[in-house]
Image 1 (cartoon, rainbow, N blue to C red):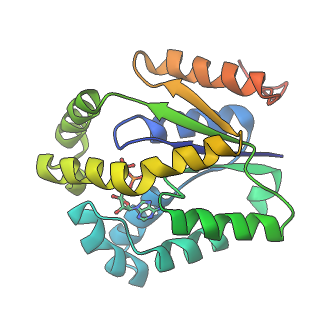
Image 2 (spheres, rainbow, N blue to C red):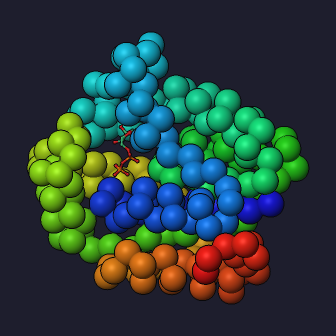
Image 3 (tube, rainbow, N blue to C red):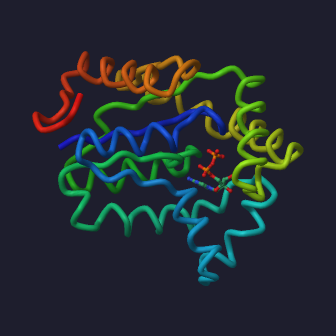
Length: 199
Ligand code: ADP
């Protein structure tokens, strides 16, 4: 069982690393942002509720997000563990996740903080806006998302640090190098790559 969380500002590369780590550790990557985006795309009821918050760069209300994650974590593929990307991002979400995991007799094993300079992430998101056209990558929305991260999510890092489960990873440089840094940090915490994995 490997239960991981990736935390860091927008543009730090959480999604990119989450896909790679999920593959190499054989656990599902669960991104609340991706789940919301696919709901918006498929015009579901949840998507309709979430869209305005996302377009403005605000957090979707905790009531919607917590319920969604509880359902997702209850699915059978999470029995071998999971990697959360973008959840929890408020103290209320931490409380809800703690309660859910405790009710199953578990907790997060390691919280990986991707540390990146704000100027760098703004530049990365500017590029992504050109490449992918994500509606929340518009410059003024990006700045607001960084503010929301600083005020609502950054404090969670201290919470997890206080529990002794935090590792800080430099998110600058080559994608492969960042993956190696994370893998080494996890190994240092006793979380080894499965034997069949390429690295
Ligand atoms: P990023 O981390 O780059 O901002 P995400 O894909 O994680 O991108 O999130 C995009 C948007 O989805 C957020 O700005 C927010 O509106 C919504 N969202 C994602 N995860 C959560 C969450 N845990 N709680 C509330 N809103 C969320």
